[in-house]
Every structure is written in C-alpha cells, then in structure tokens.
Image 1 (cartoon, one colour):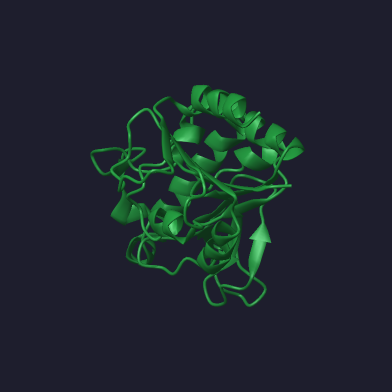
Image 2 (tube, rainbow, N blue to C red):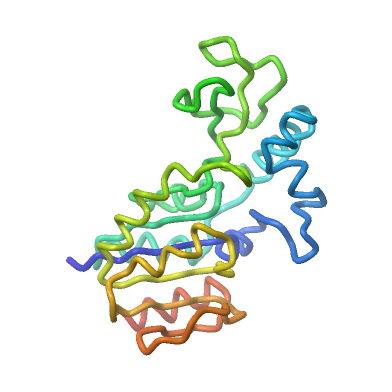
Amino acid sequence: MKKLVVLTGAGISAESGLKTFRDSDGLWEGHDVMEVATPEGWYKNPKLVLDFYNARRKQALSAEPNQAHHILKSLEEQFDVTIITQNVDHLHELAGSSKVIHLHGQLFESRSTVDERLVYKMNHWELKLGDQCEKGSQLRPNIVWFGEAVPMMDIAIDITRQADILVIVGTSMVVYPAAGLMHYAKRNIPIYVIDPVKPSISKQPNLHFIEEKATIGMQKLKEILA
C-alpha cells in the first residue's frame, strides 16, 4: 500500500466555518496575533489569551468536518494515509482519519506552564485562571506559539521522507518550519498542491497544482488517484 502524506492548513478548516490562523491584516479573529499567540502575550495578559482560546474552542464545538475531511478519510481504503496538519482544531479526527499529527498543538488540550510534558485532554471548552496542573502551576492552551519550538517537527519530517505521494491542501506555504516539509520528500514523487491561490513555491516537474478550494480540489484529487 502506497504511503500518502497530506499537509493541511487553514484552507481546509475555513470551509467548516473556522479561521484557524491570521487574516491578511495580521489579525486572528480580530486580535493581534502577538497578543494571543506568543509567550510574551501570555505573560502580559493570560486572561486575554485564555478567553481567546475559550472562544475558539466554543466555536470549534459547533463546526463539522466538510467534504475535504471526509475524502481524506475515504482515501485510507486505498493508501496508508498520514495527515500532518497546521490546524489546531479536531475536524480531521471527527471525520475519522486515523493518523493525524498536529504541528501547532491541539485546541482541546491544555498543558502545564512548568512542565510541557504534562498535557491534558479537555472535555469542556473553558480553561480559566486558577486551573492548575498536578504540580500546582497554571494551565495554558497546548498550542505552539510564535517563538516556541515545534515538538512534532522531527516526526513530521520523518513521515514526509516516507511519502510515495505528497498532498498539500489549503496552506499558503509561508509559515515555517511547516512550509519546509515538502523539501524532505523523496525526489520526483508526485506532489499535489490544492489551493485557489497558487502558492509561491519553486517550480519543479513533479508539482501538480489544483487551483480550487479544498472540497472541490480534494474531489478532483480523488478522481486522479483512483
């Protein structure tokens, strides 16, 4: 069974009504990303950060996987599929995908502020000041903020190296280190890029662009791979 590796970004969640990253004006749901997505923002105003992610969590609870998510799940019948996502929502899991790596953390997890190994699943949408880990420190969202290391990056690189086919869906390919993943793929394997706006990436003969939003583009890809 061929190994299909899929790198997904905000474009796949947008069709489910979620904005998982900043708009062109640098704002994320009306907030300066430096206020809500950096360690400095956390130390300056932890309540603002907690409230921001509580709102994102509440919004995500009402979102449903779209056709692109479901097609990715269906491809598991033909391929060994691993999804490497830049998104922090749980839509891939809700669609039933069995192998999902979250590069930038997970919205429905919290973690200790003194020991990053202490990660907790959240069965509710609210995280408050005073919520503590087992070591007595404040819990924070388990999100990889700007300026922080990406713990899953080495695993993502290793999986990308195993790919027989690489698919990139709904990402502008400008956020590093995730944007550099495609360069770890084996030479000359087919790489399919699905996005209505063609990303500015170096041209090479094995690159195939499908200039469509994720739902339509994934349907076209499924037909190509059939």
